Image 1: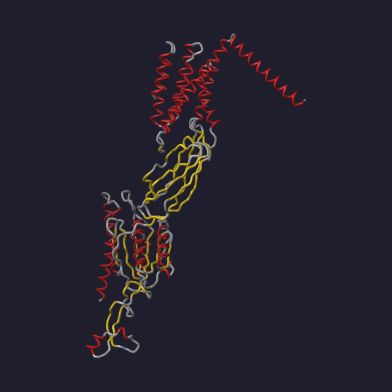
Image 2: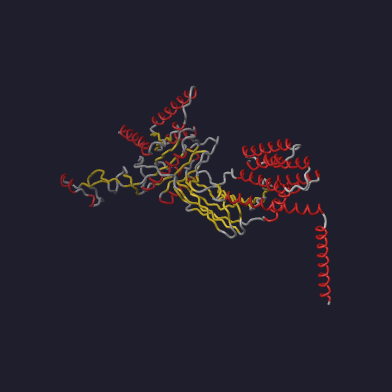
Length: 425
Length: 165
C-alpha cells in the first residue's frame, strides 16, 4: 500500500510554524502553546501509525448468469493490525449495477479481525464482464497518512442474453440430409404421409397400403416425407446501432437477444446453427449442432459490440463453409449501414434463402421540430423504400422493437413467405 | 462554524478596549472563512480561519500585553477542535458510506484529543511559569537533575569496575 499525506498534514505544519515564528517575533510563549497542538498531532500521526497490512479476497456467487438476474459478490477483509478507518470500493463494470449494499463503503477493522462485505449486483446487460478490482484506503485514528492500495481478484462473469418469448420459427425452404424435426419435401422413409404409387420391386411390404391396393387391384405403396434438419445462419449486423437516453436497450442489445433466442430454439429442434457477425470486426461460426455449439454461439454473441470502421466489407470475405447453399439466413439488423444492406442484397442475388428481422431504430429517434421533423420523415420514407426493395427481390422483412414480442416480428416474415409460396404455386 | 464563532466571540469579549476592534474584525473574517469552507467544501478557507483566530489571539497578546496568559492552552485546544471538526465535516461529504457509529466515534476521538492537548498545554504553561518565576523551586529542580546525573555516573563506574574484577 502506498502512503499519501492527509490534507491536514501540510496545513497543520504551516500553522505550527506560523505560531512558532509569531512566538519568536512577539516574544510570547503563549503562541507556542497554541501552535504546539498542531505540531504534536502531526508528529504523533507520523510516528505512531505505521503501514497497515490489509488483505482482501473476492468471491462471486456464480460466473454464468442471465440478463436481469442478481448475483452476490462478497469481499472478505482481514488486517494484521487494527485499522481505524478502511474505505473500500469495488469497481463495478458497465453491465452490472449494485442493488443492495454500499459501494464504496468504510468499516473499522480490529487486529486480526475478519469482515465480509456483501454486495448484490444486478446483471443489466448481456456480455462478458470482468469483476475484481478493489481499491482500498486505510487510515489510523490520527489520520495524518492515508494508505492506498489496489487488489486485483479477477472474475469473469458471463451474462447471457435474456431469451425472448418465441412460439414458432421461420421454416427454411430446403432441408439438409441429417435427421431433424422438419418435414422434408423429398420422399423417403419417414412418418409424414406424402403420396401413394405403384409397387416396384425393392419396396418393403411394410409400406404397402392394403386398402388402396384392394381398391385398385394392384399393389400400392405409401410414400412419406422424411424428417430432416436444416442449416440456419444468423447474420448479425454490428456496424452501427441506435440508442436513446430514455430506453435502457439500444438496437444492438435487442439484436443480440433476438439472435440468442433464435439460436437456442433452432438448436433445440436439432437444426445446425451458424453465426456471422458482420461489422467493424467480422466474426463467424460454422453451422453446428448440440450443446457445445450453443455455448459457442452464446460466447460469440457476448463478444459482439459496435466497432467503428471505415473499411468496406462484403460477403466475399465470409468463408463458404459458413454459408452453406441451402441454409436459411436470418439477418438481424437495424438496416442502418450501407455495407450490411449491400451484403444482404448480395446474399439474395447469390440465391440464399434470406429473411430479415429489422430491429427498428425508428422508435429510438426523436422526430424533433422544423427541419429535424422533415429530415425524420424523409428518413422514414427512405427506410420504407429500402424494405420494399428487399421485398421485391423476395426477401421477407419484418420490423421488431422492444415493445413487441419477437414472435410478432417473426410472424411478419412467416406471413410474407407463405404468400410468396402461394403465389409461386 | 459554531465553535469558531464561539472562539471569536470569546476572544473579542476577552480583548481590552484597544484590541477589541481588531480582534472583532479578525474573528468575523475567521467565521466567514469557516463558512466558506463548509459551503464550498474546500479545506483552504478552514486553514485561513484557524490562522485568523490565532492572529486574533496574537493581537490580544501584542496590544494588551497580559502576563503569562493561561487561556492560551484553551485557545490552542479550541483551535485544534475547530480544525479537526472542520476536516471531519469535509470528509463526511464524500461518496463513501460510513459504517454506523463511525462519525460518533471520530467526534469522540476529537474530544479526547482536545482534552489531551489541553492538559499538555497547561503543563507547558506551568513549566514556562516556573522558569519565568525562578526561585527555590527551580533551584530544587536543578539540584535534582544534577544529583540524578551523578548517580548514573557512579552506577556506570561501579558496573565497569565489577566487570574488570
